[in-house]
Length: 331
Image 1: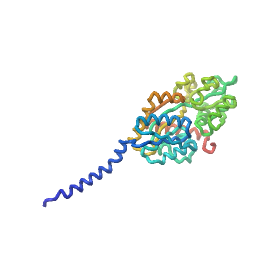
Image 2: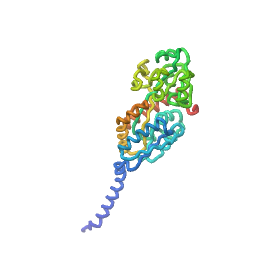
Image 3: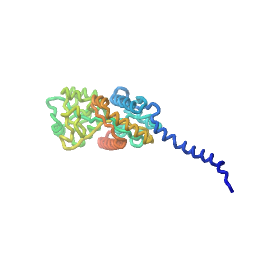
Image 4: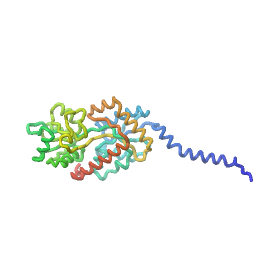
């Protein structure tokens, strides 16, 4: 019996076309990304270092991607509000988060009620910039002259050490310093780094752990003593300030950083395209120059590198907070 094949061929062609149509949109969408403006959520108010670095990188990346990157500030609860908001957005690459140490690892380390998981609710894209924590002390005739003298002094008598507040990265770095070197230090929390610095300059506290951008000008003007950098190398703006390992043989490393993440499930093609744009921005001379004026250095690493940083820092600060008894209830 002879089959009438033309009757079935159109149906098969339609079925084949439907299957292809079903597979095409995702691949086509990834290839065409970005096809519209991207929203970059900054979980802090305008004007601070988080906002400034986000705008600088957003502008540079938008030139490479061919679409505007629109900054949207969503402050609240130390960066938790904006971070939680982005974690719940569609994983399409059009809403990103400018995450930082305080919101992405320190807050989850001290607050178990946070409604996002920095490792499992986001796709890491890359670290943009970083800067080490820096220990400085008041100027005075009885002040230890260098880091080794300071360590020797705090093994004999108690000194006060300020921070930007309970649960801040400065507080946790102080706790790590105290534990690693078995020192007698009394933590004095403030509502921000500026008031802590004011009391240090007036001699009300002995020591302060904070960032290079806040402290560098006071070191250069000889108003405070720079004891050490919690870093793996010296800072280019402060070449005379040693790392802790240089002086003691034991490393003390604590960095404050900013990086880019997307909601979990964002396609790898989109993540890689964004990571490439971030790395290109990090290697741009104009970006590096402006970032250096903030006392920071550009990074521009891979998604895998940034994910490792997130895991390492979350584990480290969780351990430090637990050992020091730091929790949300103190804030």
